[in-house]
Length: 157
Image 1 (cartoon, rainbow, N blue to C red):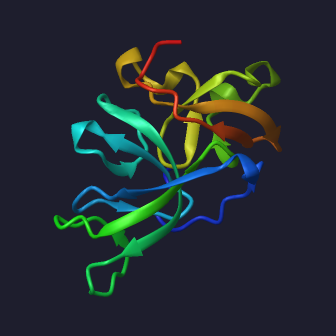
Image 2: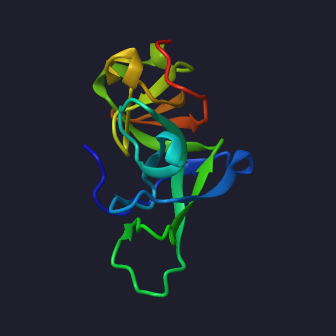
């Protein structure tokens, strides 16, 4: 189930993390610790989901508001003054869909289901599978560390 509040996500291999600043899509809310996708040609980010035309960007690490107005949430505006610091390259502890909760999935590419859950090819048709990275290890029965990577356009691998 998608996160609807900030999440303190566990991370590993922080020396591998790359960071950049991205603008949030107008009228869309993202959350700290949430996974985000780039949206089409506009180059702004929104909560990750299995959606055609999107590409994985990373995990929201922090946010910045240069609008001069107080914000109650990390919600994008038309002026593009709400930005997030996005991390990728490191390992983040995420929720695993039931279909990939086996050791046979270790090392395999996983796909965005929503801003907290990754899945296997059950994410939908090849056109909407958003590659998030690779499953590196399992933790308990429902979570695992995924190396968050920008792997390019959707594929059916």
